[in-house]
Image 1 (cartoon, rainbow, N blue to C red):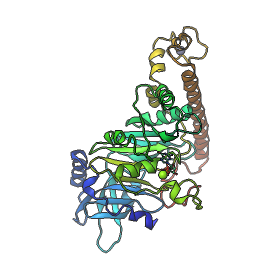
Image 2 (cartoon, rainbow, N blue to C red):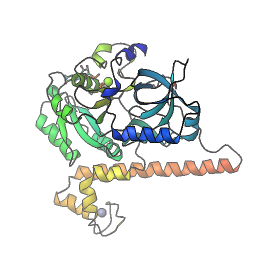
Image 3 (cartoon, rainbow, N blue to C red):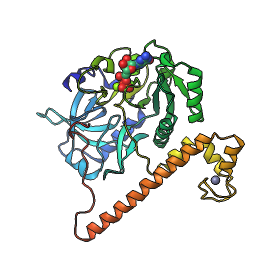
Image 4 (tube, protein in one colour):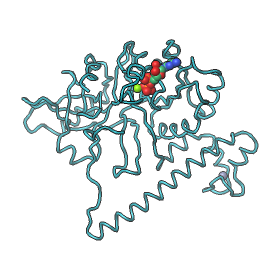
Length: 374
Ligand SMILES: Nc1nc2c(ncn2[C@@H]2O[C@H](COP(=O)(O)OP(=O)(O)O)[C@@H](O)[C@H]2O)c(=O)[nH]1
Ligand SMILES: [Mg+2]
Ligand SMILES: [Zn+2]
């Protein structure tokens, strides 16, 4: 962990994209919450989140921070990478204190129905989400891409599909066409970090002042791309650690790095399963052609499976919507319905337990210091 921090030693606050929005939120919060001891507050951004304390960059440097007790009491989620935070720097204390997390712009969240906390924020204040898939080997996994795009759209940031390892693709045009069919209306970029091809197109999507995050399975080449963008070996990639006991997840932390002359990029470990739950907005955005056709269905709550006068099925039969798109849509809808039903049962059981005098409600979840996830 300590050695990873070395990779961040030269990140400076000036490169993190602080703008009038952040400065304004900070000033307003400080004015409304004068420090009891009159000590100065500092604006910072969380640049790394691992198993330890959040690492925050401010104009004084990078330091490990803990959350103020008062903040924890008043909030049900903690700071995450990309967050802008108000810091207090108590004298004689080797850690900073996160007094407050400033209002987030878009953020990428995981809704985990298995956990009490409704939402886990994975990256905050992001403008662009790159949904990354590697080429070569098997065909592009369209089902996985569709599911990822639902969550990416849900964040409110702009999703971009990014196909990596183009050097391994036997038919690049076919891969791009498959991705484009799966991501109507979105940009599909291709990149080969190995040969340095396409890196400039990615860079152009992350102008100064903006923040992008990489979302994708382990091994698809996210860290290699970050290295290509920042022009140095800043992130460890799989090859470096091949054979060691940490397995394929070489990137264990979520961390944010400035791109010279551009914005900032957040690298993440591979995110395995993202459960779909209450993602109606994301669904509508990820399947725009189905949403559009559905306006013509006879029934407003048409499920597009068996109702008469279904304009979506008509469009599939006419060939304007690919059959597999409707199939995917229905699979994801069913999954959301199942999750909602399970949640409903759980809520009912919780209420029953509470009525019997059991303890209701969850306590605050600590996402840090939780031990390594397997
Ligand atoms: N052939 C090829 N291999 C790549 C490319 N980019 C990354 N790799 C390799 O893919 C493996 C996983 O890369 P890494 O960046 O660690 O993936 P991550 O887990 O998504 O961060 C490493 O062995 C890289 O060398 C590429 O453009 N072409
Ligand atoms: Mg990585
Ligand atoms: Zn219908």
